[in-house]
Length: 309
View: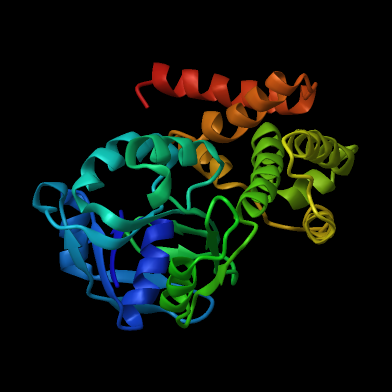
């Protein structure tokens, strides 16, 4: 299958590089600056599993003509509208669009633009970012990608995609419960992003202060309530995993949203915290800590824009 990866940032760069290294037919859709960087240095990955580099195929939007079998979308939510316009020529009658963005709102946007039949649900659990040299740096060993039909069917195309993605460095899984999976990640991300941005601190540092643990779990409970009322009650293994995640003393865990704040960048706050809070309002659920976290990051965004950020 021919794969088009949208962008060569942390998510697309990591999974795309792994597929290229395994011999898959992968092309990256990139902007001029990233194209120049890839031409000069290749696509480099720094990983706990071993560093490597590949020389990828890449294309810019104006040169995109033919449809691809798979379009892997891993851009930030605030770049999605522009990205959809750029990769539209790559969408054919049988193209699978696999988004691995955070949150849920993008599913509606992609469906509205390209039709429900082309859009899969998907999520990625990899902690990675780009460094100053444009290298993809994997911070932790996790490297999971899950995907499936939004309606829960275990389709032939999802199984074919699972086979394609089962390469060294990717733990790929076709899921019959992808929307439930995505809701659980939405809860986890809203909790981690909300509390670490609000406190401007890692989970380990928050646990070290009075009422730190209680604050984490108050926010977690708010988000779980929203998920449950939406028809996706968090399942026991997820609750157990997150309880351990949120009580690990000395944990360096920070949301990527906080890392964006620390470097003065735009955030995905409204796509994550704002969307969760809006869903809570629609359902009549009170979420005071989530609302405070949302307001905190929104105030940062106003200041950033005022300073010309």
